[in-house]
Length: 96
View 1: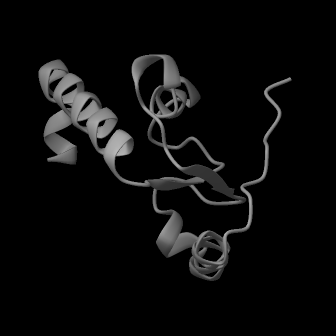
View 2: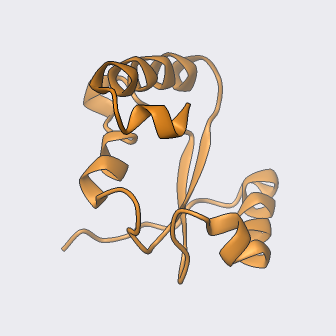
């Protein structure tokens, strides 16, 4: 499905719509790598655009990792997941 989305704007729109619906019904915690090696920062920001109804419960970032964040920084991802389980607040990344 992911590979197909690169070829189809319709699949991207459908995916964003479904994601918005899910984030309104269930807590979705997002973990991103800080390296933008596949998608642009603007694409990443689309997934947190509350004005479009996308409301992730938290957004967390792992340093020195990209699209393959789990493979590149498994311990750091595990720490972020544990933070979610323990209810620790997500860090704020300045856009300045």
